[in-house]
Length: 327
Ligand code: PAF
Image (cartoon, rainbow, N blue to C red; front, side):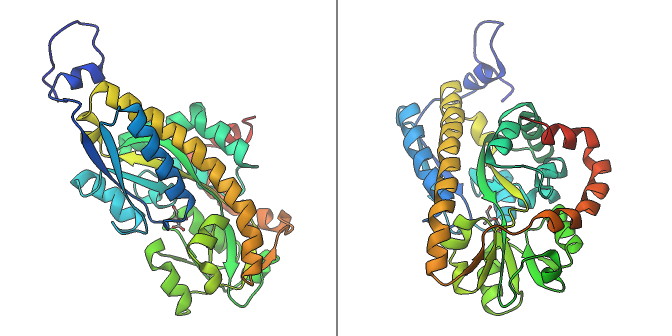
């Protein structure tokens, strides 16, 4: 992309790229995610498809592959740089192995609610984190989306307090903070790709898992788990990641369209998460799950204090405080 097309000295990097061979021809981008075709991720993707078609005058189409059909999140992230996928919707969960800085957002009980999380991610802190992801992982970030607040589900044992997690084998994402948090609560964290989770629960390899309500419903975990406790212990944001060489091959107009459409679709998807959470809590009850909707979170927060002690020196106390104090 070093050659640049003619013209003025005031051209931006993006303009230069358009002069290096981008034609604005019709292009189909391959997009992967791990969730079901009834999930919030897929609803967001449908909106993204609609918006990008409109904003790019039909020159960009998204071909969406749900259900982990292109692999787990870690595999797909790796796939961005080898060209097996153009775009991936992934939560920050598996990023501790790629860009550990971004996992500051994975600290337990860090965000009060969705609004708080959105203010942080859509502001300066979120932009800085995106920059770090781009630099460390050599990917383009298009927008923050959302997986949601995660909650514990278990087989036989209902979880009312951290002691109830003692000795329970719980699947966590492949994320150091998630694992440390569950160890601090007394559980036995077992990191595993989402694509293996349902079978592992079904076969009793693990006793428990944790995910947002829309995931628990659309991935049918109610078939293999009896209890749900609304611990809301981690807020789990997602990022739309793109192959930088694919992004650079687009015209500046197409790039702008893609960035705008990703943000707008993300705002829509965030609302879908909240709507699904409300609707699916009732449906999960009807399906027989026993739900503790308002557990006393005090003892859980107390139990994870050592996690903050450990990670304060990694992320800096100041950053953690400024996330907490964002209003
Ligand atoms: O549990 C996970 O691995 C994540 O919540 C998921 C479902 C892959 C969404 O990013």
